[in-house]
Amino acid sequence: MADITHDLADPRPQDAAEEKKDSGRKTTRVQLELMPQSMERLKRLREMTEAVSYAEVLKNALRLYEALIEEADAGNKFQVRAKDGSVTSYKIFGS
Image (cartoon, one colour):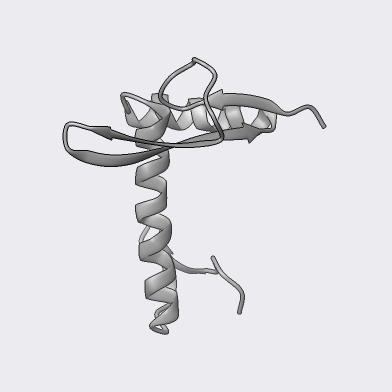
């Protein structure tokens, strides 16, 4: 397995997690190692969503993931409605 390291906000080498203050906000820089297919998926999502950065894609993905987990924890189920109106249950997490 070949690991590819990409810094989402800055291509310069950084510590794995580096905290900094930017315009009064405290942020933490995170460096990820992604398999080539995961990096391609991230690139596609950035293009599809017209995100300005990989960090924006990941922040949006985390918000969505958190919301889905909260709904699942509340006992709610997920469904997909097709263009023709048919509805299919969509299993995202466990049982």
